[in-house]
Each structure stands twice: as structure tokens, then as C-alpha cells.
Length: 615
Image 1 (cartoon, rainbow, N blue to C red):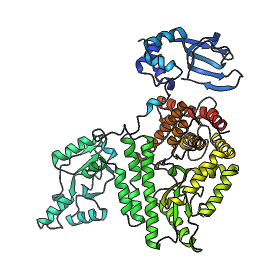
Image 2: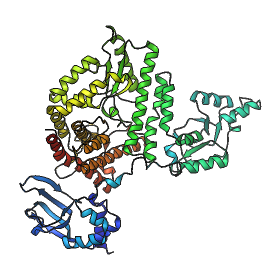
Image 3: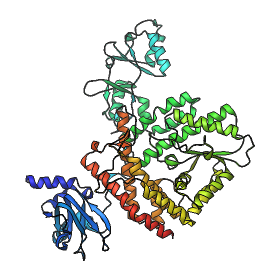
Image 4: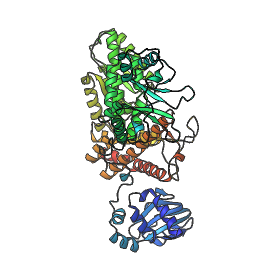
């Protein structure tokens, strides 16, 4: 293939619309394309020519028969014209270079290549369908999981000049079973390791505890790197009859972590199970804080083992649910049983099972109507202690004060029923935000029956009252658009995260808001965004293809956010939602623009259609 054709092939490889095609099919296009120049102000397509059009540079508007703007094509976008149009599809708004596959060539190629035929058909594959695996089928096993996903980073170390007694005391304070030892002049280069087995053997032989630990440490060390497959690490342990492996940098041998046989055994199940177990056994807040330090590592592990966005979010939410439950239990232990029945609820991302390690609190409290007059003297301190405890464990207090330490989010059941009635039946603009919180509520501790009548009231109201549906639809439309007029990313203009892309605000929240509207219209009890989209499709509120495209977009954006945060955690940075698009490859940027385009296109059409279906 000559240089010019190779350049065309490389360009096609970066086109997001063509990502679903096999490489061989994209290659087949290369020799059949004609390069065309379209002058600004001319009609598109020129001379009403049918076929596949691929925009190399420039800009083209697509309009309907009434001249209403439907779309704007930018670099890398494709547009298929299956037959000669009866009217111009739009103007060329900038001088443009386009690749054209004429209709007769497209038909001939389709007869030879099934992938091309499917792509050009009306039921073309979803743009992001191949970017994520089937749920539950992509988690890698021990064979390929890298050691960095399982190791303990920044392990406790000691000097080789310590006495045996001092080393034992250090291990006891740190509650560790193995201590890496290094000479004073080389702190990042461990020279040996002392395990609790080594200590027991020394004591059994009546050794002097003042003797240097260097006489008892195991040396030389057997090490692995963070990239070593966990299965290979397991084999090294078996071959050398050891239970701990220092993890070192590949380029300079610097220490980065330690891997134990327990880490590998735990990986045979789900590490979140052990984290949840430890939280349930914790006796006080400092113990909970220590355990929750593992939450960022859990997200990194889930990303490294190939978990998708749903699996990551559900796993982390389960851990945070357990933390909340344990904080309530510890309060009850110290202050006695509650004076009446109650239910602690989560809203927002926790209510939807969509949390990541970078999250805040959205919670509420329902108190039984038969509460004694002084009951709030027990419940208000509970709310404050749980809020403060979560914050101390890394789950930030809500900046919008959505938590039951504030009276609006701590009510008796009858008051909550009146509040639901007010907000859901006659929603003012601010009430749309409250309604979205109420529709995401989920009981995580206490008497679920206190909330069930309210839940059913909300769902029934949503189906009957057009005002609520319209208010929520307007809220979804008003969220910031992820792409600008010519499909460039809309970056934050100022502040701490200037010139970055807010993946939550720009990408996920519009999807969440739309899914909430669709599910409410369908009368579905689903809370998760993916579940809501599927439920809306089953009910006929949105088309199956629309639901599938939006699910793909949510999985891609949420997965990208999880990977972005995992990379920050590995680099010792605080995780956030602010992504610099320059950090992405060209193909990743194009995929993200495709996801955002799906969101924008749906906001124009599906929301209006959902309101018509309701009416």
C-alpha cells in the first residue's frame, strides 16, 4: 500500500463511526474512496449523489425538509445517503475535504463484505457496542491479573540494624506478618525479610532478643514486579516455599509493595467480601478508617482485573453501604436501641448503586410515626455521627446538605408523605432536583416498610402527573451539554479544574436524568441507570436501539471515569472526575465524542417522545 493509501487507512482507523468494522473491511474501503472538495456555501450532497460520505476536514450541516438543524458533521464523521435525496440535506458551512464511496461501489462492496453490508444497512451496529465486553465475562482470572492489582503498596519496613526484639515490636504495632528490612543507606532497596515464622523459630531456640535481626532475616530476596502475572507469583511462592514477595520497580528495583499468599487466596473470591467482613467486625471509628483506606486500592484492583463500570460501581457501593450500616450499629451500641423504628436511606449515586471512590453523601432518615416526643434527641446525634464518620472515612459530606443531620432530610413517615405529595404533584423548578433525589432513594438500614408506601406513591404519581414528568425532562435538558457547536469538548472555563472535562457533570448526569424520566414514564421500580434504560425499552417508552446506545454510552463514560481515577490513585493523586482530553488517544477521544453525541441526540428526540407517550 503506497503512502497516500496508508494515510487514508490511518485516518479511517481513527473514525469512531467506523470502529465497529473489522480492520480488513476498513482496508477494503480505502481503494474505493474518492476524495472530493466541497466549497463553503454549496449544497450537500453535491448533485444529490448517494453513497457513504466521510468528512476529512471542514463542517457540514444536516437539516430536515423544513430546514430544521438536525446535526453537524465534523472531522471523522460519516453520513450514509442510501438513495438520491429529494432535497438538499444541508449546506457546507466550511470548505471541506470529504471521502466519497459512490452508491454503486458501496453496493458492490456490500455484496462481498458482510460487515460493510451490515454497517450500511438501516440496522447498523451501535457505535460503542464493541468497546465493552459482556457483563460478567470480562473479569480476568489469576492467570493474567497483574501483581499490582493485589499487592499492598508502601509496606512497613525496618532497618537491618534493629534487634530481634525491636523488629518484633514493630511488627506487632503494625499488625503485619512480614517485615521487609533494608540497610540505612538504601531505604528503597530491601535486603531481607523477617516473617512471624522466623520469629517463632528464633524464640523456640532461646535466641537472645537483643541480637541483630539481620542474623535471622531471609536473604537473598525473591521478588516480582507490578506487571508480573499473579499466577507466576503464586508459582514462585510454591517453588521457594515462601508466603511473601516484595514487589519492585522493573527499571531500578525500587520497592513498591508486598504480595502475600493471603492476597492471592483472597483473589480467588472477591476482595470486597473481605473488606465488608472487616468493616462488620470493626469496633470503633479509627478501625473503620483504617479499613476504608483499602477502598481506593479496591477500585484500582477492579479496573486492573477488567471489571466493567457496573461491576465496579456496585462493588464499591456495597462497601460504602456496609460502612454506613456499621456506623449506625456502633451508635446503637453506645447509645442504646432506637426509641422507635426507623429507616436510613441513600440517594444519588449510592441509591442507584453507581458510586466510585470519589463520591459524597446523599442520605435521608425516616422515623416511625409512633416515635415518642423526645425521639429526636436520639436521632439527631445519630445523623451527625454517621455523617461525620463517613466523612472521616473518605466519603465526603454533601455540599448541598443532603443528609439527615439537616431537618429537611430527617422526618417522620407522615411528614415525608406530605413532602412527597407537595413535590411530586406540583413541582416548582427547585422541586425537580428534590424529586430526582426522592426517586433514587433506597433503604440501606432499618425498617424498609417505612419507605415502601412512599416509594409506591412516587412511582404512581410519576405515571399520572404530566407536570412532574415535564419538570424532570426539563432538568435533563438543562444539564450542561458535553459537546460544543462543532463537536469540540466543552471544558471547564475556570477554577481548580479549568481546561478539563467533567465526566460526571457533562457525561453521566445527563444520562442519569434521562433514564430517570424514561423509567418513571414506564412505571419501573429500577434505580440504576442501566436498569432504567432497559426497563424503559421493555415498556416501549424508548426504542430498543436508543436504549442500547445509551447503555453503551453510560458504560463507556463511567468506565473511562473509573480508569481515570484508578490512574490517579496509582500515581498518588486524589481521584476526581476532571479529565484532561489531551491524556486520551485520538481513538479514545473520538469514542468519547461518540458517547457524548449519543447523549445529545437523545436529549433532542427521546425526551420529547417520552413526554408525548405519557400524554
